[in-house]
Length: 308
Image (tube, rainbow, N blue to C red; front, top):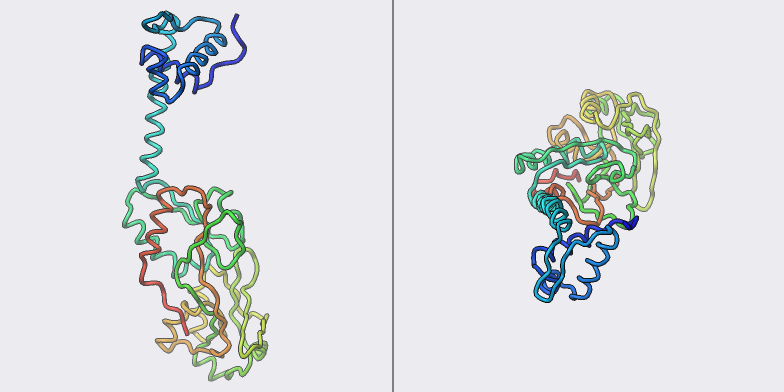
């Protein structure tokens, strides 16, 4: 009578090994099992199926007609399984496929694009998808390979590596024409009386204006004459250059305009320094695309300068 249970794939692999080796002992040696365990496995399969699969004698073990039919059906299936596993391993070693990143909008201005440019040039078989989201979401649960964020607390099973500048500054600036018209503030609180260009995260929150000097820390929430999304930071900086108000943002975004004279540093002694962005990902085995991207980050030696 047929048993309601079915043999496991491991048991069926033992059966195929016995058929190929022509005996329990030879199969046991090949599988790293004891002959008695191999014999017990075959007996268990035959009990489950309710038919004899092997004819045993003192010299050899030969498949029955049912055993031959089963082996003929199983052999190509196991071969295809081994081929699939080999393909997965080979794909893991070859840099190909999708690298999907969930990133803060700030890194899209001048940190991430040049890295992606070099990555795509180095690995023609990869595809890159960037999801811009300033909320601290579970990027991995959302199907992303990794995330890039500033300073958030990460789960214990996450690894984080710096990407871009190790340190950045929150810098305050205005156009010479604006300062000539409205004057220089002497303290961050004076910004409450100035026209200010604010930037808003995709989460809806306005970027904070935080300053620190000689042990005094000040957070200012100035009225905004103009508000622009972080992803459009170049437009906000352009409007500041045109004299429409004070702007407080990443120093590395403003550095080229300080050099050109289009913007002037304001209250530089109050600028606050903070850690640069980090790429984070699970501590488990990583795909080849992510491994290659991390290696490229480590090799990068032309990170954008930090304004001082």
